[in-house]
Image 1: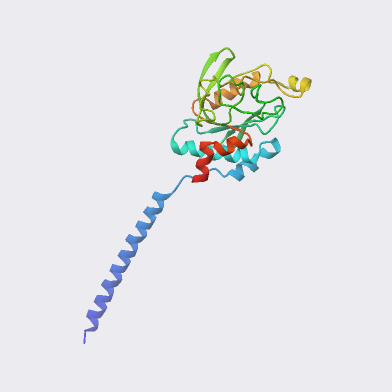
Image 2 (image 1 turned 120 degrees about the vertical axis):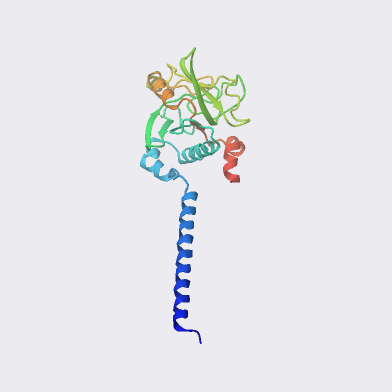
Length: 243
């Protein structure tokens, strides 16, 4: 027979060992949870609905693709100005305010205004797009904004096309964001649509500087259209399908 004292002694030590093991295990679990925490991503539906972007005309596909592209560039470290995203929704006519600049951190709509498309892309609607020099057409897809300069259109913003075969000749074509006197409501009242550019997303004179200052130096710009060729050939949109 084993003495009762020895049994009690053994049981006490066993309880101590089990309690110590449980405490260490619990700490390990807590540490692992802290390490694997990921930043909270923007809720697409919440932002779109809370800002009532649908009522302003921005289509949900344009918004959702833009947000996905923003996260694509964010993950690859390509954007320095990650506070804002700009969306041009070419599914809307040029007499609609189809440029949307969103503050993602504060969940605010900063700008909603008119923007021109290329003269060979269409009159009221932009329906044809090209990456070719001298095409005078707009190029769809994702861009990263670059630096500013003063050119023939005044204060302007350089745009870097990020999609091969879609808009990667933007620099060669001198596709930039600039002011244009033909982007105004008087043109809409007189002819039903604003003037057109040589392919640049031209802005109203009175708003262009404030917009450029807010989105310059490394933010995401997305020019959207439900264009069948773009949707099936965009390298970035295809990456969403593969993931």
